[in-house]
Image 1 (cartoon, each protein chain N blue to C red):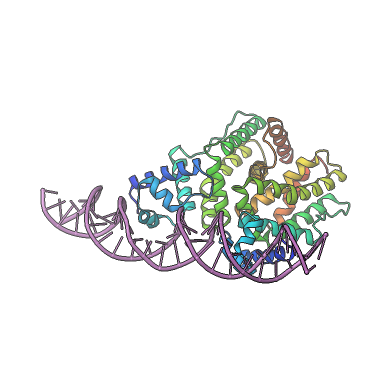
Image 2 (image 1 turned 135 degrees about the vertical axis):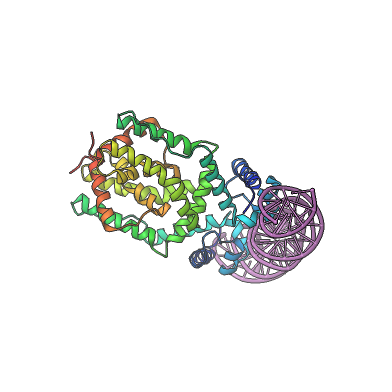
Length: 182
Length: 182
DNA sequence: CTTAAACTGGACGGACCGTCTCGTTTGCTA
DNA sequence: TAGCAAACGAGACGGTCCGTCCAGTTTAAG
């Protein structure tokens, strides 16, 4: 049970380090030095730099209200486009992107982190979208939410193609067609 | 320019090591020892274990014919379901999964590898699917191919939900609905 | 004031890193 | 077949980071 003061110092350190240097360069010794904390203190609470980073992201998202805001203007297509643009903006935000990629990499080799990530960051997002779809009359909201989110994530993950406005519009149109709603 | 004999020894070593131990545990020294090769020889040709692993996967896929086999029975839904099942089988094959996850993690921090991965492994796959869709009368084959593949990859990547037969069928149905083909 | 938990600072053996040197093998070419 | 250059094996090097340990200090709560 780290004290709150210690936690925030560590969170601040790991976030700044993750931003300014390359992903995967994080070391326990580096974080300890930056945070002005002994290694012992780190190992008491976290097993790895990935865990620290994840914890820091969670704390930050909790600070910033946390809840996902899904627009509801009445027009489903417009709302989905807005949501896509917002998601893309978050994924490609220079402040966030390296951190998210680090966590994504970490998830591949750490089942525990993957579960936390799913439950605490991904699930709320999907539920928000799913709810909006249900309100819009979609009969299979969970499946359609996945169909909506997956290609965005796919493009981001594999850096396959750019996120231009035309693609967003086309994508939303395809998803709505799959959902059998005008 | 490593000799062919050396290359295959190294490929064999990195593949076996990646299988039997955890992802990210790979080390240059470990690979060198397993391959019966000096570290110098590794560093002469590859900059990192990720690069070695990727090279090995490429070589293997080239050996095994490489080309993606997309079924074409005349029935698009049936073919897509078969393709989904085959893709899922490959992603979850105990022989392949750790390797693919290692490469996925590596891609997050290595733009060069990401580009190679896209061009040499992902693009052929997508083109194969895209061609089949075009033959099936889909007007936007590239977009639909992405819509088809992304959720499969999404589930695999985030280990979010199981790949049961019911989901595959539903997924294919959704994708076909989005493609405006019966 | 007392006390237990949390913390600092530093030392430790060990694993890998990436680079270097030196002597040997390999395979092509004259 | 003799020679030569490229590729290789072996292993030493200083360095970074790992994860754990200890002894002494600070913090916060009763």
